Image (cartoon, rainbow, N blue to C red):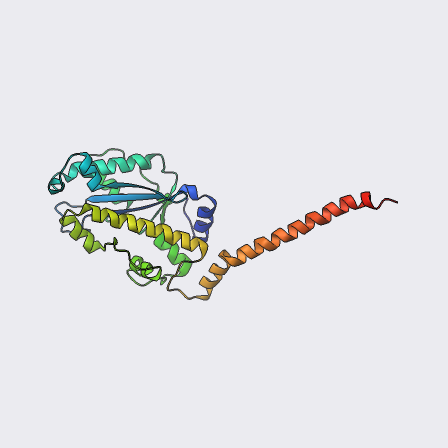
Length: 261
């Protein structure tokens, strides 16, 4: 489904966390300095939100299974990438009805269409497409929740710094390009998994009201209050009132038994 607001997203993921997957991937340079016309996919990571179990598809592991040594991986990358994407789409095939949370995977340059295009370019047929309405951009959810200026640009990195700092496995886009050129595919994969884990923690902290952002607006404060302690307080009071009502009703039914003339 398409979430029209962050409140709808929060309600849905709280009520049915098993229906949400988080996805992120790494690739070759997004500019025109590749040998091909579109960037190659180097790793994809997927985390199931309710279980926090992660499935990943990586260049180094597939190359090892195909008995391709490190120095020849780039020469035989078509084989490796095709196998990587084949396994990814096999995983997706029976989960297209779930909600897929991502970070700015919007278009053919970087996004779901990019993954589909690379699969097709390598000879793949009938890729199981995740419907547009099942794609949830976490950046958009945060902007709706905390305002467009919830973090400085680049927002992912700034949000990390606000919530514990940058991990040693994090790579910028430029660093990922350097890692690809140096055949450091494990380094790229570790960066993908770290970002995936970061997105998971962002969602968890947003749900609990503990996510730190740059926003200081009154509306943001109210959102945190009403989604956090206030809602628990209302539930507590409602429970007490319900309990008292039950006692009163029971007394009305039992009192004639105790006070017969």
